[in-house]
Image (cartoon, rainbow, N blue to C red):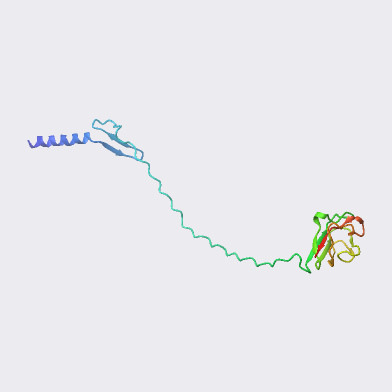
Length: 179
């Protein structure tokens, strides 16, 4: 009788084991069987994909910000400052032509200095009529410069009196001098 009970017990345990699900794990899937060793569609057969572990960025030390020194303050120049030098350059290739136009005329104040530099290959000489803003000019060789102290006002529209003495009134020079 003991053997019979033992045999019934073994059969019962085996039966219970067959009625449950049998799962075998693998890297890609799980097999689920019902009691008749048939696949059971009601049981999930896939494992969820492994979630990637976010990489922690390496710690970085912020670069030091270079110290920017403030620029030294430049005192603003008063455009009417006496003694201030205003430079005018006779362009290379001017030859017998006019030195500038009314639109490019320098603005000077009485008491300032007009420096004329000759970048041309020919010598030039500024003709200034009597009563002009400064004395009559001397010859300016190529590469040289001369300076004139502005002593009187001169209206921009009156250029007929100033021109290149070497080439005549067709080689005019425009400028304006104000108080």
